[in-house]
Length: 66
Image 1 (tube, rainbow, N blue to C red):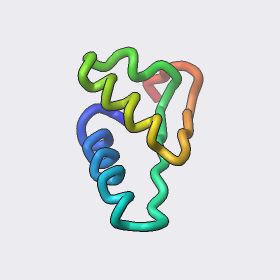
Image 2 (cartoon, one colour; image 1 turned 60 degrees about the horizontal axis):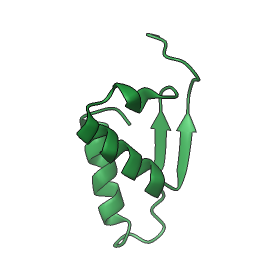
Image 3 (cartoon, one colour; image 1 turned 45 degrees about the vertical axis):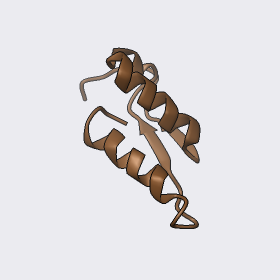
């Protein structure tokens, strides 16, 4: 769910969901609150994708460079 390719790929997947029955969208978020670091426009896209995703997996409660 990072800015760039991740969000673009998620947008495409949401669009294809109507054509490809059974397509499951899993949003993998590296850490809680990551989207708060995004510019406002990208944050809105992040929120839209996570609302429409079938599942959200958050890897960590806090940021870590590793």
